[in-house]
Image (cartoon, rainbow, N blue to C red):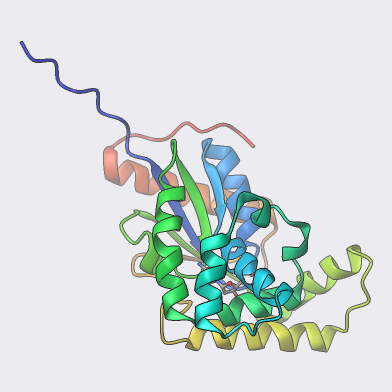
Length: 230
Ligand code: DC
């Protein structure tokens, strides 16, 4: 008698796309804890490439240097405290428009996302390009002014002296670049649920997304997921 191979449960993937300052990373981190999944912030990959280019004196629109930098990324790069600023965010948005760089990062993201029980993956093109097969897709957004206000407060908490109009202009410019690039532009993926957090606190946004995941889960398998409470 042949024993059938033990089937591993399919990793659960939750795709969270959306613009800068929408609260998607906070939400993704809480969701990951709620369901016992890993949190993968794909923006860090683009930021790490930009960081390497800037540090080595290259332009952020240099395809050869960007692809070489992507191949050299280590875990230490992703854990660097120097990835967070708005300057590197803009650099990341520039490298993100390079088709060869996106192609190089695609298999990396898919491999990382599928490890273990699965992941909550935050980015711009996760539901549309990187992991379009997942049934759990969200586009988290908020009005430009509200996102600028959140970013402004965050910079103030870090001890910086931001200028509100400048923060808002930079966010608008980044939105424009991320939405208008020819390859994998930021967009609401087919089948994604839009969550506008303009008038929501984090708790309300988390509850809204969890409710949708549970609804989808029932539709898919007829059962609910019992995750850990945050
Ligand atoms: O999410 P973030 O602000 O850390 O992302 C920085 C930039 O990286 C963002 O402006 C566009 C790019 N990015 C992308 O093009 N695709 C992703 N999946 C994640 C980020």
